[in-house]
Image (tube, rainbow, N blue to C red; front, side):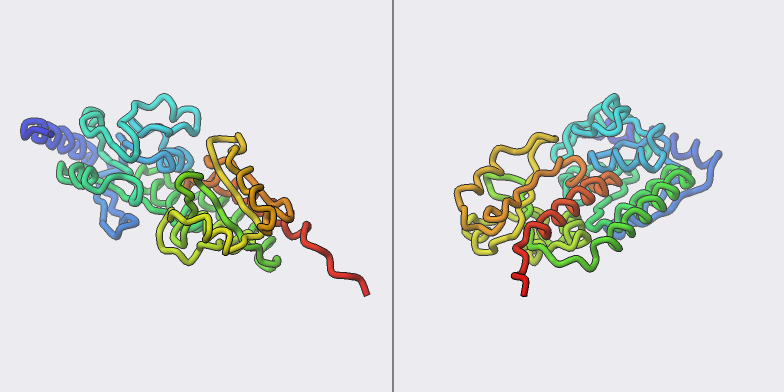
Length: 304
């Protein structure tokens, strides 16, 4: 529990920081992904990131010099590994956050505990919620972070480059024959991605169809029977890093599964596929190549 004295101290510190900024720089006002308006007296100069994807994207937006803390697994780029830690994204260390005297917190809408975010908000710390659910949202995130940190030149250029690369992917795969995909993010429980998840957006860009794309949950748990019934043409799995997860081989127990019949079991490093950052384009390109391989493996129609 945070005591009243600590709350008062924190409020005074942040008030002084913001007042100092106001004298030197113009105010910043920006809506976040929950529709809440965040107001700063000037560009943020002491940012604490509460999600690994936010940390990475803040660096890509040119805001790295102003990061003073981040959660565990904020490991890209290399400079991020040196930042003081404030707990994990699912269990924040509130006292560690306060000690860093942030003038802005960048949070994850579906990842950070709502009660802890409300506690931080109640202390008067500006809190920006990010929730990029589509591939297009990543570019918007870059631009918003640039505005919050006063690094618009770097951020806008990064967003432009991202959009150009994304447009090329769409152009290359928009008209390719569709591939039914089961994307597996874990074994026990058996977990996949639903409609709101950014990976569903990536699958669509590659000309794929997420067999569980009709589910409204971010990361729904599904049954083995449901996967077998869906009979995907490809199974794409992630695990820990570059190593192919051993449990991907478990699907060999069902040789009549279409993905098994055609040898379409694939693995992608989760760092470039499951983080809402510019590097998701690297993961999407790998996914598109995999799905193109699936198309090449389809039986050829008999020649007349």
